[in-house]
Image 1 (cartoon, rainbow, N blue to C red):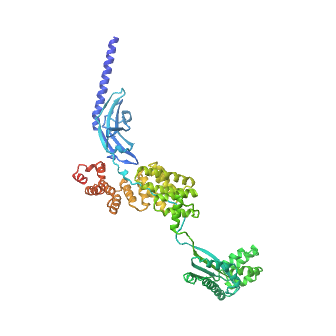
Image 2: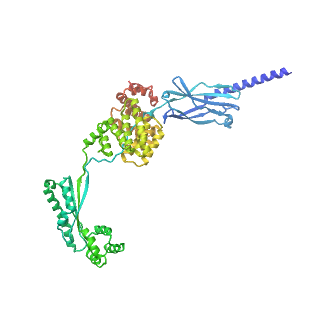
Image 3: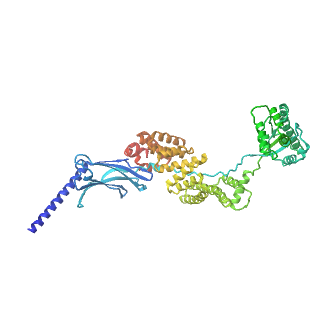
Length: 598
């Protein structure tokens, strides 16, 4: 009896197993009716990742209790496969599966690798039970991959220098000398001529300073009639001009005097200078000064009436003897050309300091920076800025040395040389930032990070901070140009369009902005932009290539082929890229495409 029960149990288990296997087979058979869609198709890379959405819709009544249907996607490339996350359909999760189609939408993402450029997204459907039994569908292709148009962004490395403030243009510096007159008179006294002012002016003229303009302002004290004061204010500066010219003649500079612009400025009925001298006087009390100012600043009354009121004050004698004499003056401002070393001298001295053949200490930090910036050979400029860092160890010099290394790295054709200069730039821009955080150094550090292909998000953060620090227009525009590049690399296409719109004008900036429009699916703007770049530079093969890509997105077949021909004619390497580019998947089999690639 016991043996009979055992035999029956084995038969029951076999029946159950057979039934389960039959159910799994039915599920796999019904899986042929499943609807799987992938967006986008073909797959695309953005921000170094390939992301897509897959929607799976199963037939009604396909799911069974105790069974699981799994959609197992993978990306196959070359002879390898990259497994992606699996999507499970359980009967318990879809209580209406007998009358409604179970549906799941899932997002997938995997890091991009250049080996993935040509491959296939495939899935296998797997029906399984709790006992580990399973049956699978054949491998089903879902989408091809990968469109790599976002990788065609052009790197832009722009160095930002700090202006040390040296001005090699002509500058005028003022020299002031005052001559005082007796009450009611405009004759220059001998005491003034023989005194400090006269001796100073003689020495100044004898030194043959290059003079452009002499401004002589004539003033008067408040007492006296308006007519007399007006005449005094004109006659006093005229007297100084005559004396100035006579002295130049005495020093045999009459020809020079003829090219000097003498400007006479009479000041009449004006208390401004009086108020200044009143404030300086130490004999008058503050109360007396307030009393005097109340009269002077009174809107009512004429100049003469105010003078009469002042004469009635107890403090008037001090005013008359100590304040009035100081406003009976001709103020002379002589504008002479500031001496500067010739540009060639500064540049030569800068180079000599850099190569160690001179220990000249007369060059200021600003002159040394000027010498560096006016040295066209970047290696020589770097040597001068290196000398500047040793001379002043300032954040400005370290930043400018880093900026020069960035320019050297940008023009390097050897990757190892580019890395060498990028590393040197990183060292000095880091020193600059430790000393002071500035827009120039932040922007330069982002350029270095881009060169070294490091932390795009950190680079973006530095550029945003640089712009927030409100730099000058040139630094801001450069920061925006590089920010736009990093935003394209980060998949932030709308931001990139805006940043590149605020960048310096140039073919690479316009190219990148047009690419951002294309990636943001603003095709008409992309087309306009690429047309502009291509028309300005007919030898720009990649601009023509992206014209073809834009045409493909717009479905304009003739423009696809004509632009591909232009692109390949400009750069033969583009042919191989186009053969592999899924942007043209709909044209691969056409004769027009084949002809364009001949």
